[in-house]
Length: 272
Image 1 (cartoon, rainbow, N blue to C red):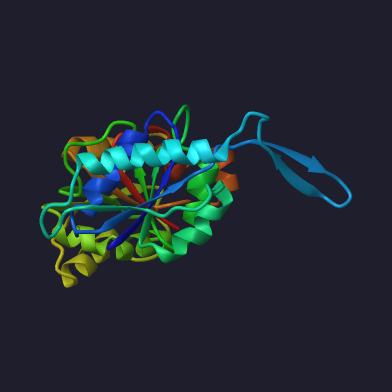
Image 2 (image 1 turned 135 degrees about the horizontal axis):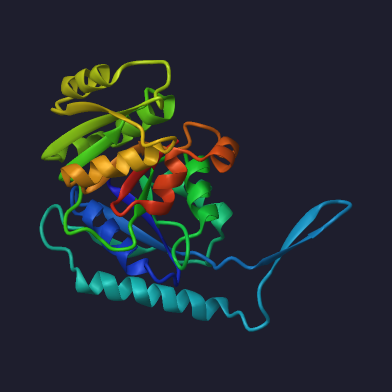
C-alpha cells in the first residue's frame, strides 16, 4: 500500500485519525494525501422534479475552512518528518473541499481511505459509507484514541462471505508483516462457504501463519464476541468484511458491522 487518502475535517478525533494513517503508512513508506472534507450542511429537497440542494450557513467561508484543516494536516506532518525507507510521507491534495458523496469516487485512485469512527464528534457515517461502497477499495477506520502499535497482532473475523474474502486479499500486505495473525468465526454468523480452517490454509499458502478459533456469539450480537476476542489477544488491528448482511437488515436487527462501527477501540480494516 503506497497511496493513502486522508479526508481532513474539524472533528475532535482528527488527531487520532492522522496518527493511525501515519502508523499504516510507516509500514511501507506510503504517502498520506490529505484533502479537505466539507462539513455536512442542511439539505433542502424540492419536489417536481425532486432536487436536493445543499445550503451552507450564511457565514460559511470555504477558503478559511480549507486553510484551517490544511494547517492541521501540515502541523502534524511537520511533527513527523520522513526519515528512513519506510517512513510515512505527507502531501496535500489541494483544491476545494469535497463532500461526503465524492469520497467514494476519489478513493478509487488510492489504495485505501482512512476515516475516524463515526458518531458523536467523530466522522460521519455518510462519509465512511461513501468510501466503503463507492471506491472499490478498503477503508481503515481509526479509533477515537490511537493505539501504540499497528498491525502487529491482527484478528480476522471470518464468516466465509465474499466481502470478507475481498477484505483479506486487500489486507495481505499488512498480514505478511504481522507478528501474530488469528482468525475468529462466530457460531450462527457464518455464511455457506469455506471454513475458518480453509481460510487458515489459504493464508499459509500466501506466507502468513495463523491460528483459528470458533466462539459462541454473545446472544444475537456477534460483534461483541469479535471485539471481546480482539481484547483477549491484545489485537491492534481487526480485519472485517463490512455489511455482509444488507444495511437495511443491520438497521432493523443489528449486525456485527453496526456494532463494530459504534464500539471498536482498535483500528478496523473494512472492505465491501
